Image (cartoon, rainbow, N blue to C red; front, side):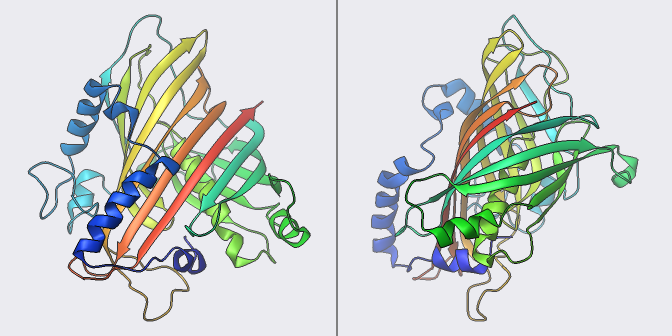
Length: 355
C-alpha cells in the first residue's frame, strides 16, 4: 500500500476553477517528463480506436458517456464489478492475430522456472525533488502452491526475492546508500493462473527498513504484476493486438486495468511487444495507512496510465527486457470542492532478466 509519507509528500495545494484550467495546461506541457500520449493514439489510429472501443464496452458510471469509461477515472457504485469482478479471471479480447510468421506466446510459468536479473526503478512523488533511482538485484522462482485458488483453479506461486539494492547514481550519501541496502531480503509473492494473469499479491520488507523506503518495494510489486501478461491461445505475428482486462490492486487502490498489447517485431523466437495501460479506480475510497485524521479519505478524480515496451521469448513466462513509464494522479476530496489536494506518483522502470 502507498504509505502516508509518500502520499503527503505528493500533496499539492488545490485551486479554484480558473487556476485548475491553468494547472491542467501546465500539466499537459509537463507530461513529457512522464508517460506521453500513447503512440497508439498518434501513430496507430486504428489500434487506438480498437483500444477505446474495447474499454468502452465495459465500464459505465454516472456522468459518463453511454458505454464509455468514467470521465473522472472513478467507477460508480457496482460498475467496477460489471467491468471486472473482484477475484474474477482476466478477460482477453484478440483484435488481430497479425501477419506471418506467427509464434505462440506463453504459457504461464511452470513450477521450477527461475530467472535472475536487475530491475531499475525511479519513483518520484514530490515534484520539488528528483526521483531516486534504485537498482534491485532480483531472483524469480515459480513453485507449486500449497493450495488451489477459488473454484479449484490451478495456480502457480511466484516469489520475487531482492538479493541486493543500491542507488544507481554517483555521489550518494553513505547513510542513504545504507538505508537502501537494507531492502535486501524484501520479497514479492503472487500467484499466476493458467491464463498468465497475476493475483493474490503480497510484499514484505525486512525488519529495520525505514518506512519511507517501503514505496520502492510497492513499486516493484506493481511492476511485476503489470508485466505478468495473459497471451492469446493462438500464434500471433507483427501487427497482432489484444486487450486484457483485470481487477488489480495498484499502490493499495482497487482498480480495473485495461492493457492493450501489440506485437511490434518478431525475430526468431523473440517477440517485441508494446504495452499501453489505462486504469480506473473501483471506488472513490482513498484510505491509506498512517494518514492524518483530517486528511481526505476520498478521491474526486483519478488518472493512471502507463506505456512501454518489452521483449519475451516464445514459450517463456517472464519477459527478457522491459522499459515502462507510468503516472498516477488523484485529486482528493469531493469532486465539486474549490480546493482539492493533489497526489501524483511518477515511475520509470527498466527490467533485464535472464536464466
